[in-house]
Length: 512
Image (cartoon, rainbow, N blue to C red; front, side, top):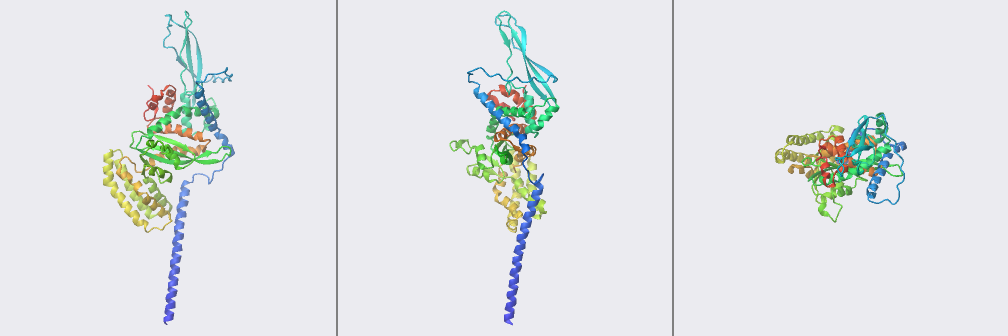
């Protein structure tokens, strides 16, 4: 009888172990199912087009404009270097430019000498004029500016006086600042590649080849670069910066394959005295690019390093900066997004509870919006700190019950592992709760790449980043980007280098 009982007990133990093993297998399978369900939901949300993008060789032609722009930019730089070199021989005869169409309306702009009295005391007489034509553009309509420079001569001593040719962004070129601004804003703000602008101009009465448009943009990029450099210098004086990055396709030379480059965005904090964003186009997502932008790559001039508070996500590329003295400030929106995606995927009750906590923290931020720094700090301590403590206690308690390796565990771990950085804003009124401001500055590029797919060259990407920095910063300061860029391109040729800061978007005032 005893032997039978022992055998029964052993059989029960074996079955208990088998049940436990099957339960573990079921738990593992369920966690895998949850993870795959989460990933599928993520992919469905991110999927806007075809499952894959195949490179069409015909598309390569659309981006020859970048090569043309690069050539024009380099030529502009070479011309500037050669300006002071005397010519050893007679210049070669250049082909004459075709005259602008006669059917386009003309508007005369007269330039006359301030004083038409000769030094000898006689009054000069107008003996003729030189006329140069500039192509202007009002959206949908071309007009021609006729720059008429009267020639004045003294009949007594044969002295000739004539007003000088006004300085232009493109010396001896036909586009006005208004036309150049329109092309730049259409491409870098309205996401119209040059191959689309070409037929648009054709419908207005004059089809401008995309190679010409690209050459214009290349030269504009060279002339605007000092202004972008000045904007970056001002940005690096801010105590709080946002940082984010997004992939951008880059056409590899010769092979025609698309390489994944990255666009880095650095924006001033919401409480900083200036509103600005500067983009940096780089070959990769390596942290060295962020260190270079913030001055941490120069061991000989450590005093030039930027050492403020950096608002960013949990990307390891910024880790070296935090070890070198930069203060890390996390993004609560990223932490919330993990739970939001989890709730969308499987209606998780844990995710719903977490979203309620995050909602309360954001309610406090909406309450203190527009308040002074001291008021923000006091309200955060009074209202947000207790909510954050309750959220942390709940996260720790629930994490102990969640199976490792699941999407739910990933959501909890993101917040718990970065809790110090995520809540740093509670003790510093200059810090925002999240990095959403910089993500909004990335959005123009996310929209643009749906139209142009990739940059043709590295230099084209850097030029696009520079011009877009000025356009987006102008918009942040409430300016019409076309009006801003037109005025800047008009004034830049005669603006003193020491006074270029007056043209920065946060200081700009229209001429007159």
